[in-house]
Image 1: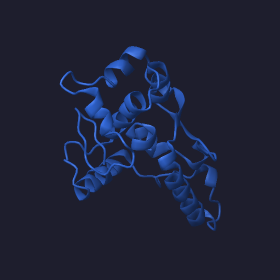
Image 2: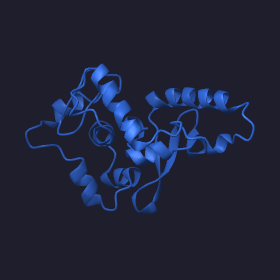
Image 3: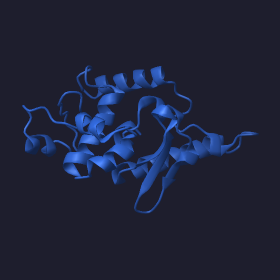
Length: 173
């Protein structure tokens, strides 16, 4: 949800199964962001099957409990933002990612940079998907440092890549 859909950490911890729409060729997650603004963020292909597996697992676990409402089930099982942050840092260490880069916001920014530079989405589209109040905020958020050639940066943005790439708060696990 963080790396795939560019959700903020607090948004990701509140996503319920009913907030996710998975279709054959697309998917969306609905969230309430800053300023109580509702938005829908796309779910990239590479993450849809993982998300479907998580939902299936959650539904099996909830299935037989009396009074359980699958529509209200938290996708991350009620993980708090601090708990989620600890998990992110732990898996960053296990994966060999520099601890200063293994945090939720780096994942959000990485997705935003992928959408802009690799996939070519417009700044206005990104503004909507990221839940920013203005295009200028989105432009600043996705700006490459002047020392980073765009071609070199884009080359490291493959979702299937397993090496770490870092550009001022952006990483690829």
